[in-house]
Figure 1 (cartoon, rainbow, N blue to C red):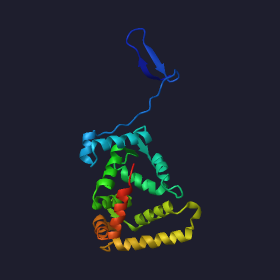
Figure 2 (spheres, rainbow, N blue to C red; figure 1 turned 180 degrees about the horizontal axis):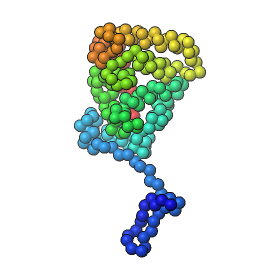
Figure 3 (cartoon, helix red, strand yellow; figure 1 turned 30 degrees about the vertical axis):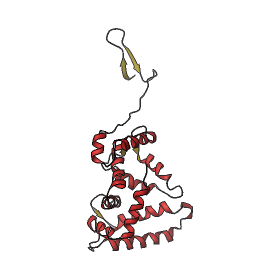
Length: 217
């Protein structure tokens, strides 16, 4: 048998706990790696806001981390009629910038800081990073097609999918966006071209403002 821990002091009275002797397994709780002061410096949240957000985070994620499965489950409540796995996976990767395989509180609050308090350019930059699936700084037509397809899956109820018409719509939408964003006609979109196009489009800026006012934890 394997000893998992010992209890008591030295001497002949030592007692040992074994796996089959009512050993209590305490789940690991991951705590933030940054202090509140550090989080305040890195974000635009106040001490009170950070404490409030952390309480909410701990209510939903007592372990102190969000797995991809848990994140997808939470995301699915926002789009109950659609298929959210692909899009939620893309969002998860964009929040988990250190590729740990889970989201920490400090990862989440950094993202919220950008999307709530960041400038329009900051938020557009985050969106570009979301679309840039392999994170190489360039958006290809294939990546854009995957993003567009995942958004269609979010918005269109699964039971009403007409795969032929949806495939055509995805292709048309991808072609239209790629033509507009690939300003240098290089066959890929860099962040500079993406930002330049979006920042001069008032409709896109209004959409970003709507995103700003509707984000909550």
